[in-house]
Image (cartoon, rainbow, N blue to C red; front, side):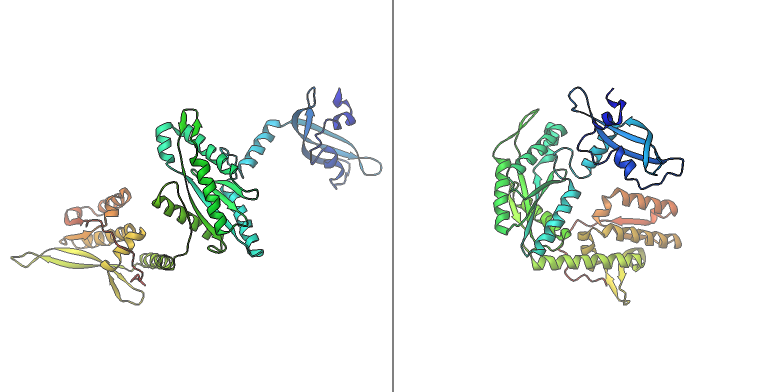
Length: 406
């Protein structure tokens, strides 16, 4: 038998191995005190008639010293682990590459982008990043099925790769988006690359198992570090440019350009969000009750519950100065939750009180908000009959650049 001797067994070792039993035993550094020294390793054997079949084995055992203290013999068990090894290799591969397209996944692409940005800063040149979306993928899914959509994505990836420069890197960023890192790239290079990619996808239909499918791509891009100094900024600006390109026309390209007014408005939005959240956390949301009287008797028929916010300095901000901002920032439902808590508490404490309160349209269509309201009403039986909910028409308001809450 070929493996009857150590020399014969060693002849089966794949030259590409980085470890073997010899390495595990002779380079262990252990000392045998009489009971042997354990070793464990994994390596590949070349088997079969032509020696082309790979068999991965796990080798466990103990080696024993000779008179000079060095390893003289080894006793162990060799177990075939090819299936396990292939599974581990597959997991390792998928940790960095996309299983459908074979391109880098988002994590690996982001690492490459980080390295490209660092290199551009070090050598005082520039790099580019493109976010490329396959257009109307949801419609393709619905019309042809997910299998065809996957074929379209894979084909688009192949076409993009065919038009890339040698040093550029392609990866699958998300379900319908690819990312391209362009090293040593000027703004003009970005535009030229976009033309190549747009043409590569648009020039021919994608052949799939269900027949030909026409598709296009839309591209947003950013040049760094000129217009973005961190990876986070690069990704955000590329997404913003992609959104602008989609709004302009599917199948188009837009490169990011700074906009001082827009950037300042966004900073104000961040500050407004922080101030509103802080007011909620610090219980500075208040309710003012305004009487609504009968026209004849002049007696209060009910009270309108009006939301107020107390600033940190004690001054009061009316709802009209806060709600439009909160609606645009997606915070109004949090405010409505707090208002409901306060009003139900007052109704429970005052059995004769009848109250009306305004609720944002965003809350009215939110099932979670209704669930929270139901919980409040169940916690305070009898108050539902004394509560009136009003919802104004949805308003389109521009976000104030001077949020009033502080």
